[in-house]
Amino acid sequence: MIKQRANFDWMLKELYSGVPGIEMIVVLSADGLRIARYGGDTDAADRVAAACAGLQSLAGAVAEEIPTVRGDMKLVVIEMDGGYFYLMAAGAGAFLAVLSDVRCEPGAMSLHMRDLVVRIGSHLTSPPRHKGQSV
Image (cartoon, rainbow, N blue to C red; front, side, top):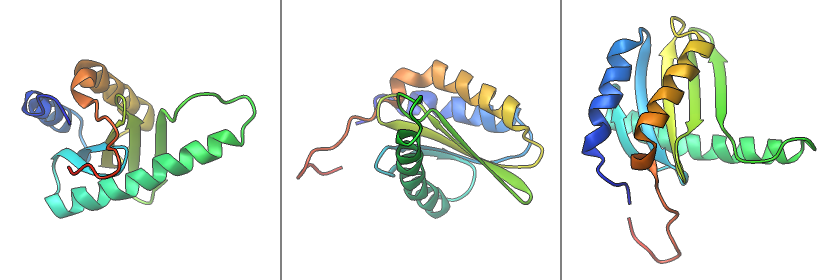
């Protein structure tokens, strides 16, 4: 399970408050369960976390088709009318997702996310559950 979650909630708030345009931040496990969130409501964060599980799986499947690519998914960016979605690997079995409006430039946002992941990486380790193990 996630270690010392409360110790990084303030870091999510710091990112949310410090970068204009962020609508929601979600920390999730690889299987799509919300670990923490800042901004947005809980139900929306749960839906985002579930969708992220599919996106990281899809990114991995696409990467397998590129002969020169080795390793795990690091970052997915989706540009939409009026905003962006970012999904970044954030430790063993954990991911950081950010939804923003157009004020968040993708290059700068990925740097802010990487800084956050480095600062809280040890807290974002979510080991995979085994068959029959409950949450």
